Length: 203
Image (cartoon, rainbow, N blue to C red; front, side, top):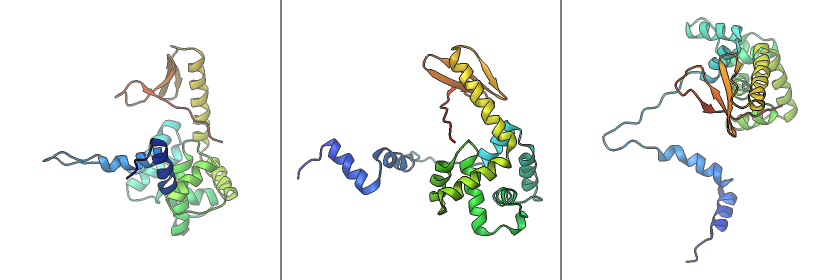
């Protein structure tokens, strides 16, 4: 039996399963197992990305909506997101529209554009054109003015930090500082005071 070279092996993986690094990444979760006599416990906080972003950005209507939902009095946030974007009542949002609302929430909050939306949409079985995705992006942003403003504040603060290494710059509850060739962001939790931040500007 002939042994494949590394290049040939990578080419085979690419043909059969997709980009090799993505394949490795997809396999990592299954490799994390509990040792003998131990349990592996994981937790997932409900809508954690949307909640934290709304808090950081000061998107108060959304914080109120999360509070109402948690108290059993408010609408499902994915339905509410779609409803606000299209001028509907949350109670009238269909199952398919809610799925679009879910993708909107997961893909667009961190300055994602059409590409981010379409990548997330494929994972949730949503198929729309790029033109429709661009319209959805625009509608989502119109309903999140504080979040849009927060993106600009983050960008300005991060750029200022890169121009003056060692200087601490502030973007609301987040601090930036450049040290060597890395830009670090200090998060509000303070548990890991400095963590590497990668800035991706999506339009």
